[in-house]
Length: 85
Image (cartoon, rainbow, N blue to C red):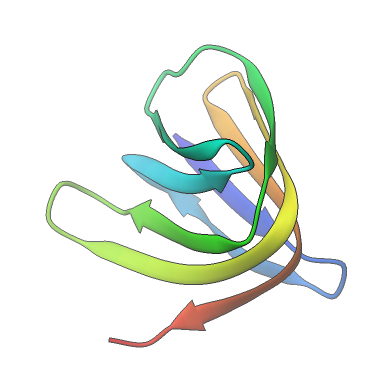
């Protein structure tokens, strides 16, 4: 699926991914390839991008929303920082 992570300042990430784990306001959840349409509020926490089954990237995000539609996940957040390994 296509993942885009957008902040008010810039596009932080765009690319094909296997899935993404997000911090929802009521707990974390995961969106995988071909997920049903969804809109959810996000809290502060760690976002895990599953590039494929063996490679991941991590970001710290602060509040926002995620929309899933037609195998594309758009994450709109107030702020995000990549976590270096």
